[in-house]
Image (tube, rainbow, N blue to C red):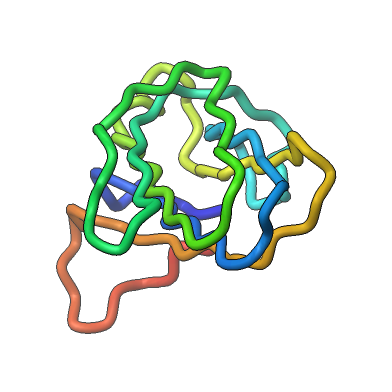
Length: 130
């Protein structure tokens, strides 16, 4: 969960390293606090692309509030991009990437959050975790 009030874009960079049969459904939630998931939230639309080979990117795809289901396989990267303007009508300032198993089969991986378009430029940006 990140506080995105000082940014224009947030990217969740998801890496699936090892795991041949598991899948996940990814949705993005706009929320009112830093609880995981937020205490009160609503799903918002976003864009994503998949990189499943070392040098080829998939198409930039629009996802609805229902999100999308990842594909089976190892060595995948998902670029999940949120335009912070999507939070405008919600009144919320926090974003959460919700990941739910589609197929019960563990996958080794991780998520990195990248934030772009900072409104208040600083040498060391303020934390976005509160």
